[in-house]
Length: 527
Image (cartoon, rainbow, N blue to C red; front, side):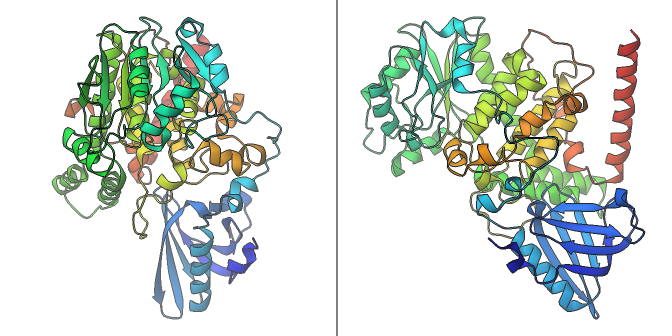
């Protein structure tokens, strides 16, 4: 593609840039295929502003005499204003930004062009593989095996080529189970609890339909999980009513009569349009400074964002409690199994597994439970909170995960090996990035697009020594204990670092946190 086709005006002089925490600056604006470049008049390179066009969520144009003003609302929630002399130039710049910020062909996106001197395309792309993860869990290899039934992605397009399943279930059986589960997402292992041998499985909903169709192979697989004894739990992230309604469109749930050793629990987690609109209302409330504190708190409550945080953490806590305290294995699913299912399984692992709380362990968890497990990042993160586009498949499920992790880190400040800046960095990268990690909707799509060969891996970069130091928690003290979050209303707070990051309050808070961090590092070095 020729990006120049979309650039109506490449350069404009005497543009005034207005952005948070800086005085208005006059300089030259340049539009490239992937960036807006603003350089101020005095030529100070340290004051160069480079904005990835993919980060722009909405553009608003306003005429002002013979000139015009463009307001850029970004996916990282920053709002910029450009005062451009000449109405024609203003409209041309706006049209160029609108076209170039909404490219939907993966190979045209910036990660395919990003070539920093410190990185090489020969570097390892991911952190691990299903084969390596399985090899590290020797305790489970008597009862569980690594299956390559999906090696060509034909059984389940959103699963990786290899998955862990019960040893007694052969690949022929898995193929039949996949036909009984939405999108082919048959039950697979995602966590083995070393303390008692219990597991967390995840899948999509069974396709029982209105006729209550059964699948003997699916029943056999789940029976093999609990090895013919005891009780297992199914946590359905839909309400009982939603699950019942799903039968009318071919979906459904596991019936008591066919899955007698499994107890079904319903915990409704919102997703899709409801979750997206909640984010929009929250960001609108955080950007509105014209009301009293009471009015602001009312708008915050009406957004229901903290209610979603509460439900996600409470459900993850329930899952972890079933495994750790009750000693039962759990299958978790919603409908597709690509959103709230991954949210709950990831949070439960953070609660239970100390290995997932290190910097490398947390990134490895995201790779296993979100990238390889088929969360559709390109669909869910096409737009953030400002877009005027009609909402279709967008939903900030991953941002909700990061918020829940921040709540955990706030409640257990010594238990996490990573710090808030890592979570903020991930919240930004998932919407607009120099790296290919969050491109596409599945491992299959990333392989087909050549993402692993032609782009750089964000997670590998974050684990380089210089970055690792920046994102590590200097207070970290490893513990083998589970960390049980409080979900009482007074225990959950607005994530100010993300949602109020462009206010003056956030600047003072960030400076204080940095000074505290440096003080801790100095004290630990001295001791």
